[in-house]
Length: 355
Image 1 (cartoon, rainbow, N blue to C red):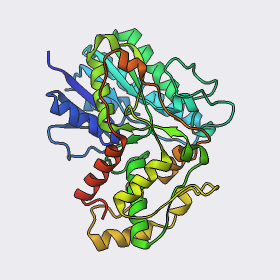
Image 2 (cartoon, rainbow, N blue to C red):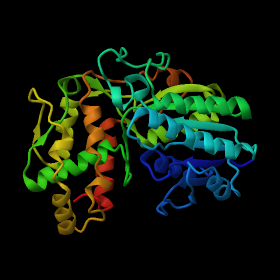
Image 3 (tube, rainbow, N blue to C red):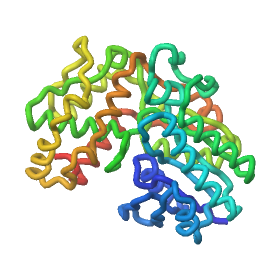
């Protein structure tokens, strides 16, 4: 039987890179999204609302995937609402697909908020684990929509007999437009504005992030990891951290990014300077820049998500992941983090998204 993938959230950083990789490897690949795009050759679009079971029944009538890759979420005002909405999306989809009896494996992407806590209690004293974070760390005694999503997958697996894998990346670096959590593109937009306006390229985060160790996850590495876990028996029914495999300090990487853009880096000066505040009035600046350089996207909020970059860079601790579990089971792909950022910057420039 051919591998038939349903990528849920195919317009996001994770989903779009995964779809490209699956198609490259010869998988029949469907991409589900509320507003599908047609920018991935070979991807079969499915426009559907995960919160509407009747719509899912109709839109998936002719789709019987062997593998489901769930890479999306919807941010709500409270964690209770995050739990209600994001668990419902998974539950609705897997209930609709249950009737087809085609699913062999479901992969779910969550992230390090599994260890650091949800938005309302993110990286606060009293909830912080020892680092590097490891998969065996227990769940925090906090409401967390990641836990609710996992539980929906576990319950459906018990009902329908498919295998599963959970993937917990650090900050995902890759190209996507309109994404809610997009550090790489956010920093590219910020650096471009600084270069053109003469503003300082000021590190926005905490002393702990500036001086401490960190890692990130290239979207292409995450895609490879999901496909590996879906097709490797030893990786079935397991949760995994996934990061590039190297570590760095932001005091080093900030200089590397500044050099790429040919601007001067300004490091941590004893005070957090939130990027959301620094960029709050840049909407018109970006429209002018986009007009001057004939860029494809003139809405800054379609490219930059300063609020989420502030969450990552403002944490009061160093954060990195342990990759031993994946390595022991045979996943050995590695990515230099500089190349993750530089390759993204070059792609954004070549696709006329930054000047």
